[in-house]
Each structure stands twice: as structure tokens, then as C-alpha cells.
Image 1 (cartoon, rainbow, N blue to C red):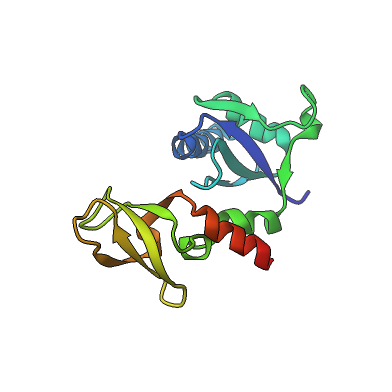
Image 2 (cartoon, rainbow, N blue to C red):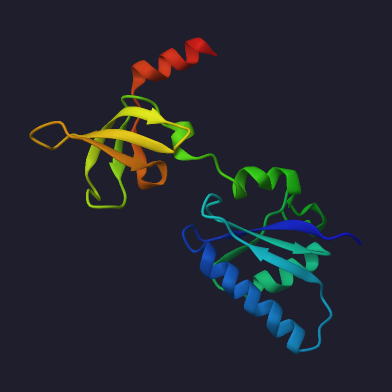
Length: 173
């Protein structure tokens, strides 16, 4: 039987804890001599409320999930039917495991918040985007004089999109 990737529902923002607990439970099963095949346990910050488990059967995943705190069980397509357990294809995981950089998603004029560096927690407006270098030039909003600051794409999060730029992008597509 070829292993499949099953989805375990978890408490939101507790995915890392649940993944570690599931991993420990698999280790406990091995120590007890149970020959259940679980190959990997995976969580992603981009997949809120879910942990992925690669195993031979959904029954194995359900067994380890029922003994694990902060889990809500195996994701089922039909309530009560273990054979309807939700699986994910490896190709679908590419989007989760390799997210698009913020630089690809941000537009000129967007309102952003800096999440690291000397201007951490400062709000700014995007002035220029250099996708090749993964750099964004922003102007701090609360500064008395508009100061252009160059930051890496990973150092900011989008707070509000500029509606004018969004409409232009939609018109071009």
C-alpha cells in the first residue's frame, strides 16, 4: 500500500505543538512495538488549523490523533466514515510549502507595517518595488519628513491594499 498524506484538524495557532505531539505519539507507538507505518508529520505556518501526516492508512492517523491534545481528529469527507479521510496530493503541497514572496503580492501605494529592523511596527506606504532584488522602498507615514527606506520583502506585512493600483492590475489582466 502506497502512503498517503492525511489531514488532521488542529487548534488554530497550535499547529507546531500538535505536530510535535503527533511525532511523540508515533515514537511511543514504535516503543510499544506497534508496527503502524507513519512516515512523516508536517505543519506549515501557511496552513492554519491543520497538520499533515503521511501514513499507510487513515486508521493509523486517527489512532495517534485521538490520543493527542489540541487535535480535533482526522479530516473526513463524510462524518463518521474513516474511509472518506481527506488526503492531499503532493502537487497541491507545493503552494503551501513554497509560498510566493511578498514582493510578488505587494503593489505601489499599499499600506504596510514593518515587522523587523530599526523601524519595527512602523506603518509605511510602498513607493517603489524591485522584484529582482526582493527589495521594497517605503515611506514612513508617521515621520515628519517623508523618508524613503529600502527593506527586504520579508520585513513587512500588508495592512491595506491601494484600491487604485488593484483596479489597474485587474484591468491589465
